[in-house]
Image (tube, rainbow, N blue to C red; front, side, top):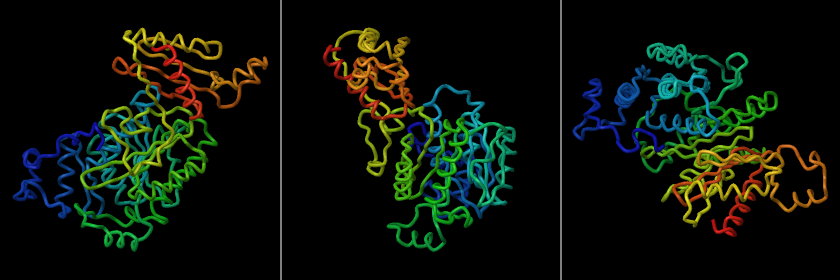
Length: 427
């Protein structure tokens, strides 16, 4: 569960919730819980949580998927992390696309309630479109959420505002490639499902299954990035219901030599879901996104994600001197001044930022070329800009973050160089 999920520390107390939302009382059992095999009870629980905790009122047709609130909240909070790892932005101007929003329209509603984003929400199901539109209206969010019906063959990313691009896209795609596959998956599960699922066929089944569905998104996003530079800042994201699908999708990213991506795992009770995000520019996400729990004591990377992780965007170096934080950063600044001819450095507010437009200017190969007195334009190559940020965590740990650049090797080399020089100077 996401650490900021309000249900992470405190599971809903059904008796208290029923006092707030009386419609839930009829479903309470002798254990002061509800029967999760009762679909009406599950839907009423979702409605109660959304109203009490987010001031959202929704209608849910019994023939369509009922969203599990805590699980959906995990995804929205992760999207927040992705956006917040970029340069500062105004939430009022953030535009998201929810592909297959469903009858509940839960992702746009939560996104608008928590961060005041704007959304375009699409679906191919007329019933979902009708109910989602009603849910938007009864929450007075029609000025922030636009509901659009598409078809199974429609491009995913075209319904944008005029001359604008999406800041992010999100999707919880149908899992299965056929009804037969869906039925077989239920047969071979080790234990019966904890909670009942009722849905239309289009919500659960799509040609080729979830892997082909999200792969279509990937190839369409590649085409968009080639045509429109502005889309290179877009975070394209999707959930996966099967770990094998995520593994195969990451392989597709690597075949395209696309290393600017993030993967994560959502664990909610006995349910596990995975998600992937990718983009085409060189702005790099925060270290705790490329390595979940980065530098948190006692944290670990899920076994499921090992082998799927992108290049690391952060590293730490332990400092041993008894100087103040300011003094330690000043000493690091002095070390890097050796390269000030080729590196722009700014030291302020407990943070040191640096930019090199010529890549790894600290390397032997760069010094060799400099000795040979090559012209500046001959040294510089395409896509060589490298930007970093250095700060001190606590009083003794130097944190280096990769902010921008195309080469993970350059970042690794920079960390190695800095660590060696710090050890030599006993900082």
